[in-house]
Length: 500
Image 1 (tube, rainbow, N blue to C red):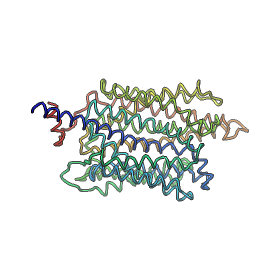
Image 2: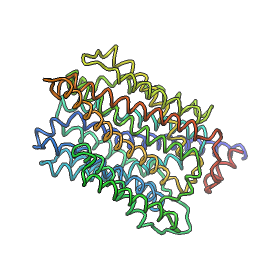
Image 3: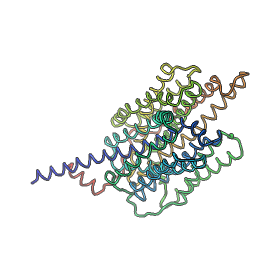
Image 4: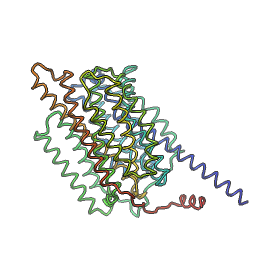
């Protein structure tokens, strides 16, 4: 009888374990789709401009509309997942994302595409933190969660490079609409499987109050910040409008922290910043996002405008980087499990800085195998050794009740860092290209030498950001992070008794 009972418990435990890993496949597929969409649009922009009649000035809004909504609502989306249910917000976000992808592909004008991209960004902002918080509450902190986050990191780190590859292939073989249509079968499949593979969970709180003032201030502040950064690259940083937007954004974000310090039910409990590993991981995420988002942006421009690569050739060029991230993400999580975040994250950021310095040496008539490929491999190593420990560190010691908001926070810092980084890199590249033209009479601003000079200086600036992240992470990260508060559900208690 006892033997039969033990056999049944073992079978139940095995089934739960299998379900956990199947759930991981589901949420990683959704996250990969979100990250992919950030980059997949870039190589299709020329085709979109021609078909929908965008002006050169308004074309940026295809990317900016998505970025504003995504970066602005992530933190709110994470807290909504904690309060309303993580699976519920996952399904809601994924449904919005999938439907808006269909509408994007069917867009008939520039205005309609921008509107649908805003809606798509909203879906992504609800989906992404919900997915990461489900991972956090499904896998216990330690080796098991590190393995899961290694897989998550591989998807997040390789999604940008894969997006450029897939965007080039779909645009060349079919049309730009298919960069959005590709999301539909994945989204439908994940929504259909969610009720069977994901369990509902929410924060165990004594109240269900919602911090409306905090939500309004941080969402408005972050959205204004992304818009102001993007606008500044076209109209200048010293214009009255840009300064006013940045000042208003700073005021809203500042007021958010004042509201949170006084709120009985804060959107972002400020006590989580007492976790030094979490704080350091988010600071590194801000700097890493600024360096890496901009790296993809500048490299795509270099290959297409200087080396004159086609869309498909530009995409294929990223294969080495993508495969390196995927291959070494498992190594990164194993190293974090054995040595800790503090010994791995600075190495990843340092390797990323080295790769950016190599990109700063790119010549006008660059060769893929001698100039680009070695730097791609080092960059892939850096991304694997940065994204994985960064994700682990951002969730280390976090209570389950705060899983959603902590997930939203690390996503927010990376996205906001990316928006700031692209704005700064674009400004630097444009400024130094103009100076090159002024110093070389008869040179066009669109010539290879002028563009390459601007890109080189911008890559040096990005390398400095990554290096600063390496220094900060080495200085701030704890050698032995504090253990999380014990929060056992009934199911977890049964599992622990069975294991004992």
